[in-house]
Image (cartoon, rainbow, N blue to C red; front, side, top):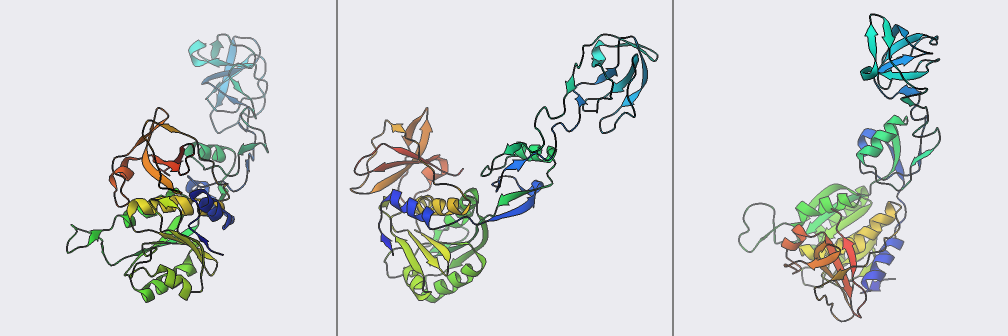
Length: 382
């Protein structure tokens, strides 16, 4: 059943409900930056694994003065135990020999040949085994986006590779006869502004863009492009062709391919003529051709769909206030580009659906509705 022009909130919720978790894969931790952890990561070792020295100095046994009988470097172990009156030089991170009373720091030590003098206390500057984490302890919860510090923690905890959520593969099809790919626009053409930005928005949302195609506004070319895309992609994203004009063939192409349109248009400005369909089990997200409208549609239907594939819940939007007067068309939602400053929304200046300047500097959208409800904040995936 097709939802025709649902509310913005209903459209988002319905888009999320149409997708399911895409699955996981195992990757080296060197390739896991910003990937979403598929299951809890539990430590494979005690952290630290050994009882080690927190400082450069000497490991000493019993009361001083002590005889220096050797050295312990990081990455090596002392053979046997220290006896009372003995000491060894020790580096930060080196394993503390058995029988050690405490660590005497370099700056607190005095030496005369092999004789060491100074003072320390019991277990001073010991790093106990397991002080940071125990074997089997959960270090990072499933659903977390992995940052560099987390990758370092995983490496220290014994991981060479990690199980992460698969990235949905996306084919992006840009429809239109008017698109010029480089140079100064001429002869009524317009420079393509969606091709350079949409792959990055999609990647920020957690996808992998595997193909970008530019297709002229012809029905058979549109059908052929979608047919190719459904073989290699988990999501198909198109731009343009979503309205009801004489050169808008997306609806006809979906019908020809025996697809199902789940959502046809959404009660939102900008971005009203957007759609979400399914072709042989592959979701197709139809974005309008105007830049602001396309980004609104991507966050309206695309983000919830992608979140469901990544195993995420649909997010509750925070409430905001604004000194600007924000209004929406009757029985519509309106998404207004701008920024949050000291917790208040400040509206951008260039808000036409084809304009790019506010999009270039905005942090997100204020969401206002008619009938009026409290303003909400939809953050751009920057």
